[in-house]
Amino acid sequence: MKGTIQNLNINDHHCSLYLPPNYNILDINYPVVYMNGDNNIEEIIDSIESHFYVDCSAFILVSIESKNWNNDFSPWPAPALTKNREDFSGDAYKYLKSLTKVIKPFIDTHYKTKTQPENTVLIGYSLGGLATLYSLYLFGTFGKVGSLSGSLWYDGWIEFMSSNSPINTAAKVYLSLGKSEERSRNHRMAKVGDCTQKTFFILSKQLVSTENITLEWNNGGHFTEIPKRFSKALLWLMHI
Image (cartoon, rainbow, N blue to C red; front, side, top):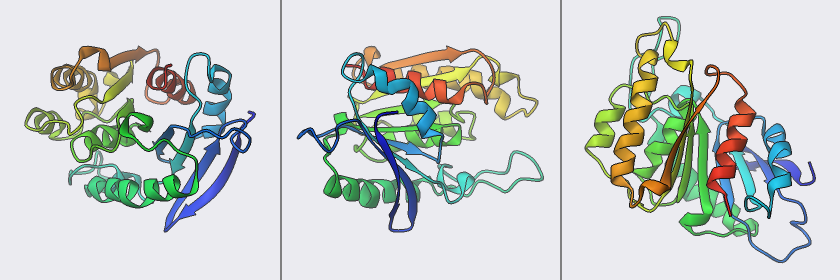
């Protein structure tokens, strides 16, 4: 990796900040990728840096550590998946509002960023992927979103999409799912394949062009080659 990663606290949010190679040398502004959850960004960046300026734009990346995964990324309250887990509290709006009103303004103020929606990306995995799609219906901030193995089985999600419209219909959307994920023993999670396809179909109708959305099927289950799935998503979203 040729760029640099540093830890950063923005109010009470713990973040990892990646700055691309030559950030301190070149007098240019960069698109920004915001990532829901504390992921292995070093491995992700390692696999994508060589594509900068060839296949995709160089970018700043901000990974935001979740205080409580089930709270931060659930769009509305829902029962737990099993008896031994906590319920979903539905605080995604609160988290996304903090991201758009606190974290993004801080990054735009202190770093060399391109601030427009088309240069602002939100990406996430699992429940964090669901929250990226939810943001489309709440804010026009993110012109590109990626939902990787998104928890699109979530109770009421398809109904919500069907009765609402994205604020920025020109947004680009990347969806992906593992081919084995719908084989879950949990009857709610087992709907993820069908719900992902329905999500793709609904958004294809809601966005200005079918070219603005793609659905990629990966080999394996929910925990297979996660950094690689992030890299593929970012290559598509940040394609030159």
